[in-house]
Image (tube, rainbow, N blue to C red; front, side, top):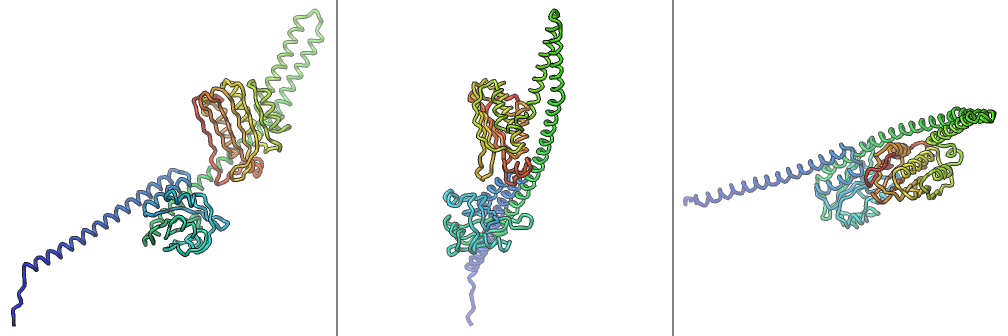
Length: 448
């Protein structure tokens, strides 16, 4: 039998090649592990940044925008967004991250009916994650919008708040089905979104409690002012008027030859009358009787009449307003006119009051006081505007101050009428209402 010969050199080359192949496989595994590590690290950094925003108490809408941006970057995905389920069977997109063309085709704030076998419908029905690997045959308005922005496949997960499906977080691909682990990965972002919502709700509750407390304090203060006004009118002022009449009577009954006595009695009577007028002026710092009797237009006309700076009035109010609104508007105009007279060096003031509706359809009273003075007013330079800010805050309104140097000063306020009507003249804060705002431009001049 022939002897079988082994080529040892060839065998060594085969073994070396196999060893190199094993090293290559190990190297490729290391590359994949390193890439996975970098992906996880980037994702954790994104979640940490979002958690920091939530911990800082950033408004939920700002957090939503950051969540969409981070989701799109970390997946990666062509589109990413957050949607809120409405009670009328629609969804509203509250945040989106995509290219400008896609954002223009499906802008934030758009409401779309939840119809068809879409991810939104699946998430809302099951309360769990859902995916669609091809939108080519998906019917309904959402399917049409998805195709319009160029998305072929998508994955969505629910945003759970207080045990119910508040909305969904979703990412989309223009190439094909999303990776198998997409549901797990974007669920972490959905959880942070829910945390931001809960934190925002608690902050809103705190704001409502603070506003309610401020409303009670202002109502108590108004009641106390009215009591003091009555006491001044019925007590001290009447007493002074009586004493002045006695002094005039004594002056008249004194003999003609006692001219010095008659002169002294006249001065006493005049002094008592002046003190009575001064006391009346002090009581006008409290809401005057004309506000209760003639309403806000009459009270504003009286303020304009007493102003040392000429006032142009534009008051378009026909119906009587809730008392807290009237009082706040009166104080606002009175404070603005006082500061104009003291500091503005103005030649004229324009006062405008009218009722209107916001973009959301809520009725409001808009107040504007604009002068042509030197500008540069500072909202923190005195107690007057700060007190007005608190009063407007308590009513759920907003206050602006615009005062560029050399270009006059404008004070504007927007006071909600529906809240005052629905709460017996007080405050009823909506969960979505904006926080009261005070802005200014210029240098210190306001002294209040």
